[in-house]
Image 1 (tube, helix red, strand yellow):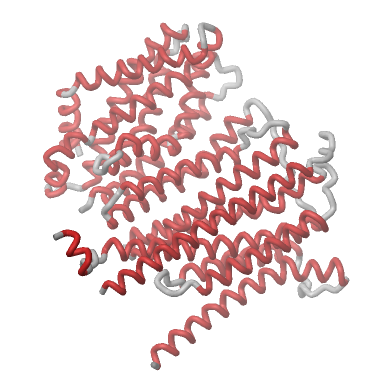
Image 2 (spheres, chains in turn cyan, green, orange):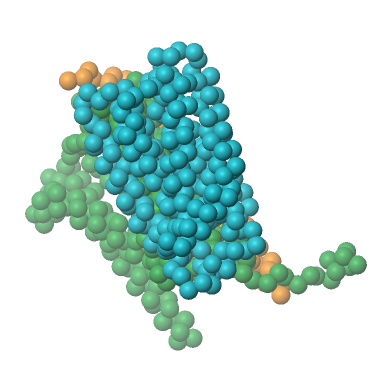
Amino acid sequence: MIAALRKEVLLQWRTRTQFIAVFIFGATALLLFSFGVGPNSEILRQFSAGFLWLGLLLSSTLTLAESFHAEMENRALEGLLLLPSDPRALYYGKAVANWIQLSLLGSALIPVMVILYDAGTTRVLSLLGIIVLGAAGLSAPGTLYAAMTAQIRGKQTLLPLLLFPLIVPALLSSVKATSLVILGDPMNALGSWLSLLAAFDAIYWALCGLLYGRVIEE
Amino acid sequence: MGDQSQVSKHAAAQGAVAAGLFFVGLYFSVIAPIAEDYGGVNIAFGLPLGVRASLAAICGVAGAIFLLIVDDPKSRARRAAILVGAGLVLLLLGSYWGLFIAPPETYMGQVQRIMYVHVPTAWNALLAITFGFGCAIVFLFKGDFRWDAYMESSIEVGTVLGFLLCCQGAIWAKPTWGVWWDWDPRLTTTAVLIFAFLGILALRNFVEDPVKRAIWSSVATIIAYVDVPIVFYSVKWWNSLHQQQSTPNTVSSVFHIPLRLNAFAVLFLMTGFIMLRARVAALRLSHEIAPPPLLSAEEVGELA
Amino acid sequence: MRGVVSGGWAYVWAAYTVTATILVVYGVSVITRLRDEWSRQAKGRQAQ
């Protein structure tokens, strides 16, 4: 698995211009959301967590779809399957790489959110923790679905179509937790939302790893 | 010839088992209460109410699932036609009862009558989706395409029932809560569920290889089904933080008869539809696998 | 306690109509698709 992860991270490092392009896409989305509300800084601040996560969600479909691009070219996935390695190792390598990339992307979008929506907070560490947990929720099923949709026509439409309804609980709890960090948490509900998010992550990291072998078999 | 009669005997036995289960279900949920309310006789063998209700529900569900499991998607559609016919008759009966015989409820008034179609739809939508989930698991272990056909059809029927459920729910919410859509956890979960399964049905349309299509949609079905309780609890939590919504959960005994009639009606319709739809899926698959038909003489002439 | 919901027959009729419409439309669509497949299969047999 470590080898698979090394390969993925190396590949992502080589295509870092792609990462920058996705980041710019996410930042543009954040900018556009504010036009949907209007120049009302109070409302923008209230919705900032939701906008951040929607921006990250939209950008994640680009990242995830791209993560199988290299395998589909030159039919490299079949070559990997011939290696005496567990498909689970392939899955977790790819999913962890996507997780890292989405976490970085989310962290990079935070300053954009702070500037555009005036949504600053001093609890940077908890904010980063939520980003990492939420990115884990996106990348586990996202990697599995990307493995399917990368192999067929119409992949640009199908990946979000399959992924978006599924990650509703992860999105909900991430948004809620983020806005509790930014706007204050009078009822002390942050912990329960984080445990919901962690439970979602645990279930899907286990389940998708279990099922991945069936998805890529020939 | 001996084989033939063996098969038909087998089919008759299966039909009898299902009919028996449905009869027990209808007996305890509809016939016994009617006899008690209108004739004053107790024919329920002294069973407590809770036991009768659970017995009826278990028998109905077991009969439907038994019929679906023993059904052969390549056989004729006689049983499915009988089920759809019986479902339509029961639905007319139950709806008539719910609309004209049952009294208006104390607090909900006439609007309560929507529940007689809403609740049965909900139960059966859940049942159809659950059966699809079961088919997905069995397919992944056994690899028999029969289960793929049943998965596709039960997901489609479940999605249609889910859509119907959202429409009824919105119509019920308007006079009750004043808005069409209230982010009630059940309604919202149903909406999310519809989109998740529509995505899976779309995936099936996009994949040309039948083996990949079956495996992938089984995997996606399992993943989406596991999501249902998580969505439900997260939405419940999310919504409960800013408002409390009460829904009348207790339905008293006068309201049971139309509700249960319609529950069996929708159960029969759902089972029949799944059987018919599975035949479509099985035929399409055999058409896909079969070699292309030979060109006829005229077609060869056109090509030349 | 909240007030009693009075009236509402229009909503009741709407709900029952929607139910009947969706069930009938779906049933008809399934039967049409099945008949199409049956006739296609019959054609395939004739060709052989």
